[in-house]
Image (cartoon, rainbow, N blue to C red; front, side, top):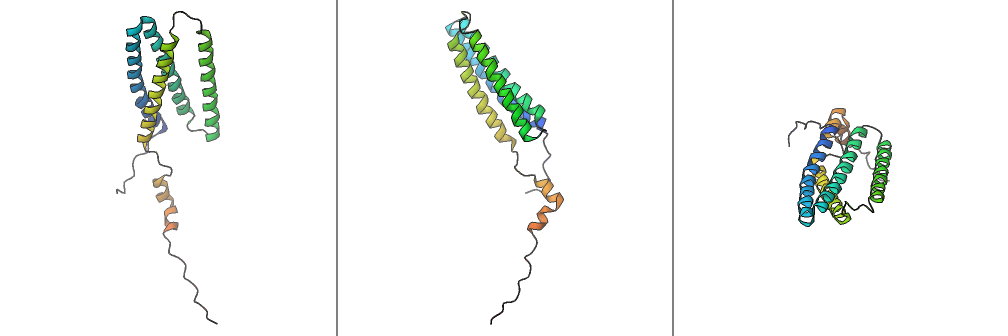
Amino acid sequence: MSDIPAPKASSSDAFAQLLRGSLVPTAVAALACVVIGFFSSPKAAYSAAFGAALVIFFFSATLLVMKRTADLAPTTVMMIVMATYTFKVLVLGVAMFALRDASWVSGYAVGVSITVCALVWLFFEMRAYKRLRIFVYDTVDTLETGADEAAHTPDPPKEPRRDS
Protein backbone atom coordinates (compact mmCIF):
# COMPACT_ATOMS: atom_id res chain seq x y z
CA MET A 1 0.00 0.00 0.00
CA SER A 2 1.08 3.51 -0.66
CA ASP A 3 1.45 6.12 2.08
CA ILE A 4 0.34 8.84 -0.31
CA PRO A 5 -3.32 9.67 0.34
CA ALA A 6 -5.72 9.77 -2.55
CA PRO A 7 -6.99 13.22 -3.46
CA LYS A 8 -10.31 14.05 -1.89
CA ALA A 9 -13.17 14.22 -4.35
CA SER A 10 -15.64 17.00 -3.84
CA SER A 11 -19.31 16.26 -3.52
CA SER A 12 -19.99 17.97 -6.85
CA ASP A 13 -17.54 15.55 -8.51
CA ALA A 14 -19.43 12.62 -7.00
CA PHE A 15 -22.81 13.91 -8.16
CA ALA A 16 -21.40 14.64 -11.62
CA GLN A 17 -20.14 11.05 -11.83
CA LEU A 18 -23.53 9.74 -10.69
CA LEU A 19 -25.28 11.89 -13.29
CA ARG A 20 -22.93 10.85 -16.09
CA GLY A 21 -23.03 7.22 -15.05
CA SER A 22 -26.81 7.05 -15.24
CA LEU A 23 -27.77 9.69 -17.81
CA VAL A 24 -25.94 8.18 -20.79
CA PRO A 25 -27.34 4.63 -20.45
CA THR A 26 -30.82 6.03 -19.79
CA ALA A 27 -30.62 8.15 -22.93
CA VAL A 28 -29.68 5.03 -24.89
CA ALA A 29 -32.62 3.14 -23.34
CA ALA A 30 -34.92 6.09 -24.13
CA LEU A 31 -33.78 6.07 -27.75
CA ALA A 32 -34.45 2.33 -27.92
CA CYS A 33 -37.96 2.87 -26.49
CA VAL A 34 -38.67 5.59 -29.05
CA VAL A 35 -37.41 3.47 -31.96
CA ILE A 36 -39.42 0.45 -30.82
CA GLY A 37 -42.44 2.69 -30.31
CA PHE A 38 -42.03 4.07 -33.81
CA PHE A 39 -42.52 0.57 -35.23
CA SER A 40 -45.95 0.59 -33.58
CA SER A 41 -46.99 4.13 -34.48
CA PRO A 42 -45.71 7.71 -34.37
CA LYS A 43 -48.02 8.30 -31.39
CA ALA A 44 -46.28 5.49 -29.47
CA ALA A 45 -42.87 6.92 -30.39
CA TYR A 46 -43.48 10.42 -29.02
CA SER A 47 -45.35 8.95 -26.06
CA ALA A 48 -42.26 6.88 -25.26
CA ALA A 49 -40.13 10.01 -25.65
CA PHE A 50 -42.45 11.84 -23.23
CA GLY A 51 -42.13 9.05 -20.66
CA ALA A 52 -38.35 8.96 -21.00
CA ALA A 53 -38.13 12.74 -20.65
CA LEU A 54 -40.16 12.55 -17.42
CA VAL A 55 -37.80 9.97 -15.97
CA ILE A 56 -34.66 11.83 -16.99
CA PHE A 57 -36.01 15.14 -15.67
CA PHE A 58 -37.19 13.73 -12.33
CA PHE A 59 -34.09 11.68 -11.58
CA SER A 60 -31.76 14.50 -12.64
CA ALA A 61 -33.69 16.90 -10.42
CA THR A 62 -33.18 14.57 -7.47
CA LEU A 63 -29.42 14.51 -8.03
CA LEU A 64 -29.35 18.29 -8.40
CA VAL A 65 -31.25 18.79 -5.14
CA MET A 66 -28.97 16.35 -3.36
CA LYS A 67 -25.89 18.11 -4.75
CA ARG A 68 -27.14 21.51 -3.56
CA THR A 69 -27.97 20.23 -0.07
CA ALA A 70 -25.04 17.84 0.48
CA ASP A 71 -23.29 20.14 2.95
CA LEU A 72 -26.31 20.57 5.22
CA ALA A 73 -27.16 18.49 8.26
CA PRO A 74 -28.24 14.94 7.40
CA THR A 75 -31.74 15.42 8.81
CA THR A 76 -32.19 18.56 6.73
CA VAL A 77 -31.02 16.75 3.60
CA MET A 78 -33.44 13.89 4.29
CA MET A 79 -36.30 16.34 4.79
CA ILE A 80 -35.52 18.19 1.55
CA VAL A 81 -35.11 14.97 -0.46
CA MET A 82 -38.39 13.59 0.91
CA ALA A 83 -40.14 16.88 0.05
CA THR A 84 -38.68 16.67 -3.46
CA TYR A 85 -39.88 13.08 -3.78
CA THR A 86 -43.38 14.03 -2.61
CA PHE A 87 -43.44 16.92 -5.09
CA LYS A 88 -42.40 14.60 -7.93
CA VAL A 89 -45.08 12.05 -7.05
CA LEU A 90 -47.71 14.82 -6.98
CA VAL A 91 -46.57 16.21 -10.34
CA LEU A 92 -46.61 12.74 -11.86
CA GLY A 93 -50.08 12.12 -10.44
CA VAL A 94 -51.37 15.41 -11.87
CA ALA A 95 -49.79 14.60 -15.25
CA MET A 96 -51.41 11.15 -15.26
CA PHE A 97 -54.76 12.66 -14.27
CA ALA A 98 -54.52 15.34 -16.97
CA LEU A 99 -53.50 12.85 -19.67
CA ARG A 100 -55.93 10.06 -18.79
CA ASP A 101 -58.34 10.91 -21.63
CA ALA A 102 -55.85 12.43 -24.08
CA SER A 103 -56.09 10.84 -27.50
CA TRP A 104 -52.68 12.06 -28.64
CA VAL A 105 -50.74 9.95 -26.12
CA SER A 106 -50.34 6.18 -25.84
CA GLY A 107 -50.59 5.23 -22.19
CA TYR A 108 -48.99 1.85 -22.81
CA ALA A 109 -45.93 3.40 -24.51
CA VAL A 110 -45.55 6.00 -21.76
CA GLY A 111 -45.78 3.33 -19.08
CA VAL A 112 -43.29 0.98 -20.71
CA SER A 113 -40.87 3.81 -21.40
CA ILE A 114 -41.09 5.10 -17.82
CA THR A 115 -40.55 1.61 -16.41
CA VAL A 116 -37.61 0.77 -18.67
CA CYS A 117 -35.88 4.13 -18.26
CA ALA A 118 -36.38 4.20 -14.47
CA LEU A 119 -34.92 0.69 -14.08
CA VAL A 120 -31.96 1.55 -16.32
CA TRP A 121 -31.34 4.81 -14.42
CA LEU A 122 -31.47 3.13 -11.02
CA PHE A 123 -29.22 0.25 -12.05
CA PHE A 124 -26.54 2.50 -13.53
CA GLU A 125 -26.79 5.02 -10.69
CA MET A 126 -26.09 2.22 -8.21
CA ARG A 127 -23.24 1.04 -10.43
CA ALA A 128 -21.76 4.55 -10.56
CA TYR A 129 -22.15 4.94 -6.80
CA LYS A 130 -20.37 1.64 -6.22
CA ARG A 131 -17.47 2.86 -8.34
CA LEU A 132 -17.12 6.08 -6.32
CA ARG A 133 -15.58 4.08 -3.46
CA ILE A 134 -16.67 6.41 -0.70
CA PHE A 135 -15.18 5.25 2.58
CA VAL A 136 -17.12 5.19 5.83
CA TYR A 137 -14.16 6.74 7.62
CA ASP A 138 -11.42 9.13 6.57
CA THR A 139 -7.98 7.52 6.83
CA VAL A 140 -6.10 10.78 6.24
CA ASP A 141 -7.74 12.59 9.18
CA THR A 142 -7.14 9.59 11.45
CA LEU A 143 -3.41 9.66 10.78
CA GLU A 144 -3.11 13.44 11.09
CA THR A 145 -4.94 13.76 14.40
CA GLY A 146 -2.97 11.06 16.14
CA ALA A 147 -6.03 8.99 16.90
CA ASP A 148 -4.14 6.09 15.38
CA GLU A 149 -1.47 6.34 18.11
CA ALA A 150 -3.92 5.38 20.84
CA ALA A 151 -4.51 2.05 19.15
CA HIS A 152 -0.77 1.25 19.16
CA THR A 153 0.15 2.07 22.76
CA PRO A 154 1.47 -0.87 24.72
CA ASP A 155 -0.59 -2.39 27.49
CA PRO A 156 0.13 -1.05 31.00
CA PRO A 157 2.32 -3.25 33.17
CA LYS A 158 0.48 -5.85 35.19
CA GLU A 159 0.66 -5.98 38.95
CA PRO A 160 2.57 -8.90 40.40
CA ARG A 161 0.51 -11.88 41.55
CA ARG A 162 0.08 -12.33 45.25
CA ASP A 163 -0.16 -15.89 46.43
CA SER A 164 -1.45 -16.10 49.96
